[in-house]
Image (tube, rainbow, N blue to C red):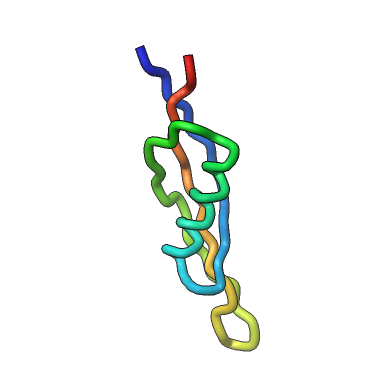
Length: 67
């Protein structure tokens, strides 16, 4: 029997939402094994001087617990 768990993480990028998500998963995978998937819960931009300076995502990441 497999048991999965979810954790909520946030990540940011100056390039875009997809890059922020990829960076978040890559960093999370350094600590957590058996990542199964993720879904974007929230997207947000930071604006400075009328320009988008940062893209942020909040994700729920699911992973299998080890036996």
